[in-house]
Length: 319
Ligand code: PYC
Image 1 (cartoon, rainbow, N blue to C red):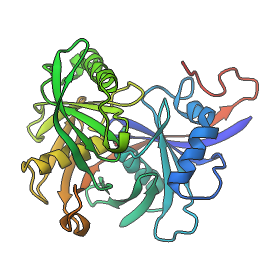
Image 2 (cartoon, rainbow, N blue to C red; image 1 turned 180 degrees about the vertical axis):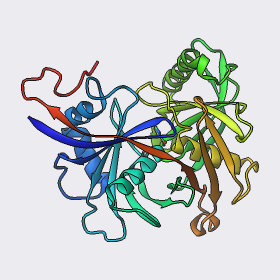
Image 3 (cartoon, rainbow, N blue to C red; image 1 turned 30 degrees about the horizontal axis):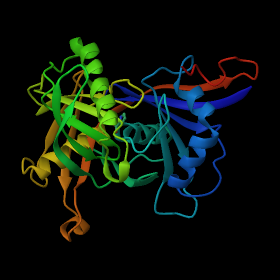
């Protein structure tokens, strides 16, 4: 019987399952190198952790690994979901921080983590939230028209926030929980249309997240979003990498000043607080901004997953 010890949390409603013991042996190397090994050799492990019957489609997993040869980071983290590894995940980073606090491995201050797309830093804030300084985020393309199969032509920005996003305002739907099916159908249609028309991020990066925006439902927010994740589930949180992409677009449009606060509501009414800074490399002619996104996570379970040798769904249900 294989045993995998996990700690579950949710960040503003979105689950994170951190694997703290029983991790696969990914060999030595950087997070970028190890995620390739994870993708190629341990897809069954990923599926066992995230998919039914031990998980469910919205589950996001995180492997907490020692960062060999680096003493400037607390750990390496590899994120994954119901269909594969994620390049970066901000709600997951907040979940990892809360898990480390729960384990007593980090309780105050700021700590760096190595992810496959670069280092990020998290800070335990005095109000109980965790803020994450994400990777440099930028808009790649503005107001790209996309002819969809079922929702007419929509326009969106292509932006990087640690994952590739297509950000759409003119989808014509109400961004409310009552419209989840219609929002999902529209976002899937847009995603398939992007693929059909060969619209990608920089260097052919697959746009695997679609973000639909609407007016906020809360008086203390600036905008509300619905985010379709790669496995076709929606993000219960406002999606931290998606919020980073949004911040980069707002900054590029001159609608958000350095240091100003943006309050992003999720489709279920939870909230992230974001802001940007322009670092030296960006000022020196690079592009984009360094976003910080803050929210709260709560521990929901500590458990040991059991993967029986004769269990036909040892590796989860993969459809
Ligand atoms: O918070 O960055 C995020 C995220 C990505 C996918 C689900 N959540």
